Amino acid sequence: MMVVCYSRTLEIPKPDFGSVKEEVEFMNYSLISCALLGLASLQARADLTVTTESTPAAPPSAEGHFLKGTWSVAALLIGALDIRGKTDRPAHDLGLASIQAGYNFTGLQGESTWYYGYWQIAGEVFGGAQFSPRRYVVGALPVLSYNFVVNDNWVPYIEGGAGVAFTDIGHPDLSTTFQFTEQGGVGFRYHLDANTWLRVGSRVLHISNGGIKEPNTGVTTANVILGLEWFY
Image (cartoon, rainbow, N blue to C red; front, side, top):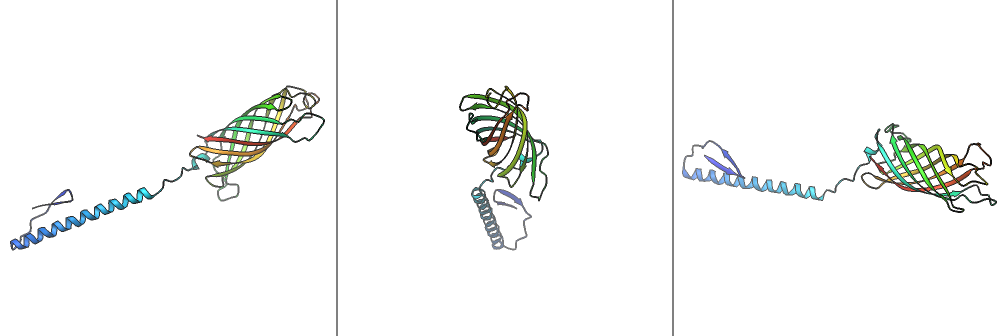
């Protein structure tokens, strides 16, 4: 005996019916059972479709950006204001731009502590000009930072570095083209999308020649930083 149920064929032994009436009743019962199974299957598929369509996609996770061996590249705009406050010489207000390439060399550490985060070493090149009188400034330096992972979206950091710079600012505060530069600051990253972060921060930047030649008063500025950073 063959019974067709919801597009599948089931082979079952034909029972020994005592009469035609019993056989008809058995066939009716089989058809009703198949119909109920089909309706239940269709309802289950409909429920699954509604659940799938109504569940929003999870936002991209930034967890992979904190792993050891992760690289990042940042493009930063920097406004630098002279903080020496003297009126008998030019104000060394600067407009700068920089590119920074960083490498996470520790991965996450300090789990369940206030300093949960990672160390990053970066190389930075910067360039720009003094507004008045117009003078150029360029430089390069390594930057070491510690990044506090508050959550997947907010990562405050502290940083510091020292390197070399070249400028024609000259007298009365500088006397050589070759200079040394030091900087330190704080800031934060905010997760925008899968690989992109917003960078906001502040620094203190100092430029002088280390006593190679006088005068060497130096240039010291307070910097405001705004930019984007991409992780790979």
